[in-house]
Length: 383
Image 1 (cartoon, rainbow, N blue to C red):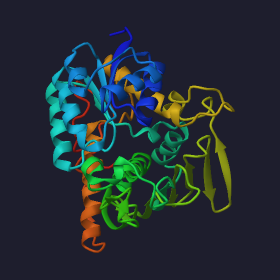
Image 2: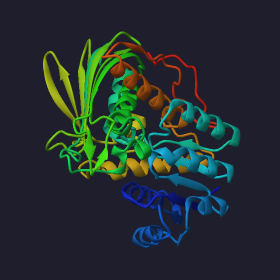
Image 3: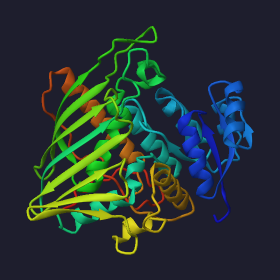
Image 4: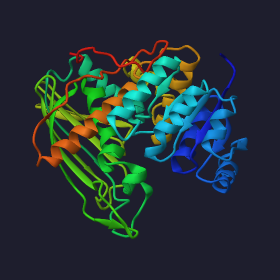
């Protein structure tokens, strides 16, 4: 399939804007959009340059003329919208969390496998070239054995009690908010870069404001985790949507027996590499980068790449898989299931006062998609 892919979008908010830009850059044609109401859909389709508006998600999926559907609706609607798109024969990109329960995520993995469709979840921070460069350093043994890690994902957009959003309400956002929304990104990136799964975790969560916008809130504002990786490495993860001044601060640091490496999403052009004898900054340069980093490094050095570029690289990989390609490291529904299981482990640990919960690597990602690239694999942790 060499023609431009016809893309549909369910949802008309911020993420739909990101998805439509990425789709267009990846040789897609934004063909149809449906939002919460026909009026909202008309406005969003016009603003985002989508060819037509459908009155609702059911009409969009039933139209039958779409190659791929991007599900950007509220979390609790992901299962309904994804199943409808798969039943209509479309490939699917579903925003995370893939589902608000692991059981529902399992249903979507099975449905995508049965349909034989490409099914992906946008864990897009994998697509920063320097994150992939860090992954290559780990895989090549440059760090030695990873001993510890320190990671955080901090935002401030829900800092005040008057700040509200549909994600803060469980009927739309699900039982978890901060961890399911951004902690899932953090865990995915830690596992992707380190090559190790989180085998055990202990978590505490906190809901700072029990009410927002006159509606009761029960999902968490913050989460703090202790984690143990498959090789025994210990780490700390902090997730917060109430960190003043932090807009989208995703950071991880791995400490090995030889070197350390640090990546900051808000400084995506560089890696800090630490050694006992001294430290240095490694700047993005596709001419000298590892092959998988250079592959997604689409501009010369000194021409900064950022979040939208990472998202475009992700959508480009998905569209390549639809056309029969086998892109390395593409996050699939199996990775979405992995995140749902980790989310349930975090909530279970927090409910028990921070007890350790086993999180065996039961959904290791398949990085080379085949006919049904969402299939969960039972592979061992990468050494």
